[in-house]
Length: 180
Image (cartoon, rainbow, N blue to C red):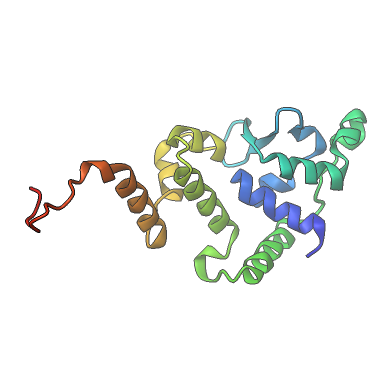
C-alpha cells in the first residue's frame, strides 16, 4: 500500500487515536526528540490535548516521509495536515489494511484498532490510568470498554497470570498424591 496510507494506519495502531484525530495531525504535533505526538481529543466538549509516546522507528519513518523536522521550521508547513483526506477515505484505508491483514468482522474497523491498542497496552503491563490518558478518556470506565478482553486475549492474560503464579503451585508428590 502507499507509504502515506501505511503510516496513517500505523499512527492509529500505535497511538490509539481515532481517525479524525489522526487526520488533524500536523508536523507541529510531534515532539521528535521526545518521541511523542500531541493529539487533540475530539470527543470532549472542552479542548483537550494528550501526549502519546510512539515507537522510535515510527517517528523516524514519519520524519523520513513527511519531513517533520524541516516542516517544523516553517510556520505554514508546520501547521499543514499530514493527511489531507476526509474521514470516509480514512475509513476505507483502515478497512483495506484490515482485509490485507486477514482481519474481518467488528475488529476490522478503526474502533477495532483502538480496541487492539487498549488490549496490547494492558498485555504489555501499562497501567490502566496511563492507557486511559493515552486514549484520551476522562473516565476509567470508558477505557474499560476498549480493554475488555475475550477469547484469545483473555487466555493470554490468564497464561501470564499462571506464569507469574507458577511458583505458588506445589509440585506433585513422588507417590503421585496431590500436594495439598
